Image 1 (spheres, rainbow, N blue to C red):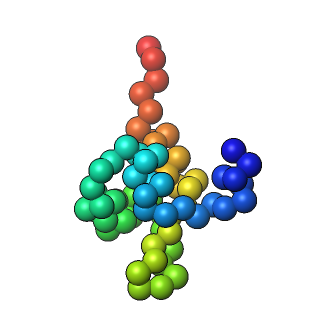
Image 2 (cartoon, one colour):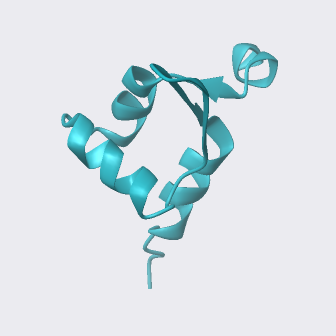
Image 3 (cartoon, rainbow, N blue to C red):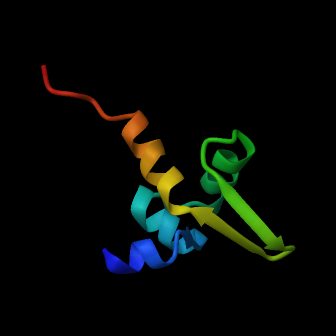
Length: 65
């Protein structure tokens, strides 16, 4: 957990593991739809805001009745 605080930006592979998605196309759609925050410091490098990934998950939480 300490590592999470040190680096708030993660790569696509880690995002896909957290969200349990297998397709980079799905990740691209999430960027296009502005569902998650990302930064593109260079043409081939895209980093994702770790907090926005967890916020995305929280948005779809189903509370028990």
